[in-house]
Image 1 (spheres, rainbow over the protein chains, first blue to last red):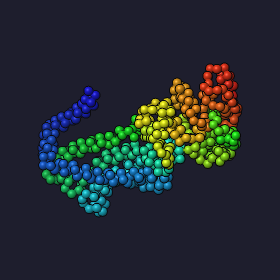
Image 2: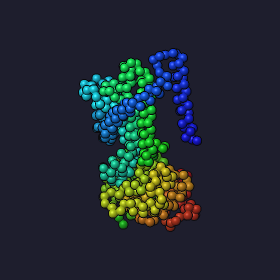
Image 3: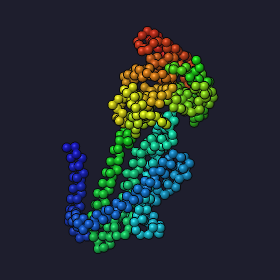
Length: 252
Length: 245
């Protein structure tokens, strides 16, 4: 019963939106903007041809690659910047300066450096997701409660143990928050990143459908698929927050 | 008998926005091996700073602390601090917390951890996480984690004052029982005179800031101590008089 209470209101909201959309399309007599039914038909067509899965797969691959690369760079760098004062003083201004530059602004440089293909979108997604993760990780290190570090000092543990059993687990909840924010941003820029992709990806599908004969049913279909996939990705990240070793932080 | 801990004429000031603030102004005492000394004083008088200096986490401006004949120059696993706030790692299970302090080679860390878990009454909670435990249980974890490394000295900074009154009373008795199993030298900081009388061999009363030793009381009563006995009540009145009460 409680599950139903959770699911019913958002479903009702979605149904209402679809109804309004449908009514407005019918009322205005537009021929170019699709009805919900046309969008569903277009989506099913794409799914049957198999191209929908190729597009989703390509986008997920690029987001996954860029995102994983960002984790590999951001987590060690954030830990280092958070722990070593000198590293923070030196690198933080640079991070804060690069952070507000939209990944879209990097498109010309990405084409120049990596050409048109998979590498450019991966690079752009990496740029979009690396900075929020660095910032969260640094903040995590800076907010480790002092009594834990003092206890570790009291027991005279090695540097290795201090890092593996105190610093990293203490920061892990913040790292996961950073990952969740970053994955959201990464998925957000996938459309822009795939403007320079070759023949695949949900972003490419949107641009291509618009260019190839104003197929707005496909444009909206791709948008809906992007939204639903984003919801799934966020769901996966939320599962990470339920791990026993990090729940202490969110439980309060 | 040579002193386990000798505190020689310690002074400490802090720099604040309004200029230097002297917190400790010349404190001098010794703790014998195996002795339980309680330090009581009004809040904000510098008790915690004094303990941090004795435990090696802060340096005095003047004077020195000598432990086992050597000048203290930093914290050491030979003396473990148990604080009011507690420092049980919330990301480790009870058992992992207990094994945390065991450095180097131990034949069986787990058996040692389990032994102390049982001693403090944590049997059955080994695989649980700290956020699943009550405040009293968390204190037991912290105490067991300290005992596992077999420290010679326990520094306790208001260890029970974050607990509710009833749990605090229960934990006092528990603490005495657990400490009677193994011999430790104990330094307890508290603002609770009754707690000090129930647990300590000697009570040092500090003055208001900057702290000096205002009075020292021996507590010669055998344990377990009856808090309503006339001797205890008399001693309590004497100590409270030092605070103008």
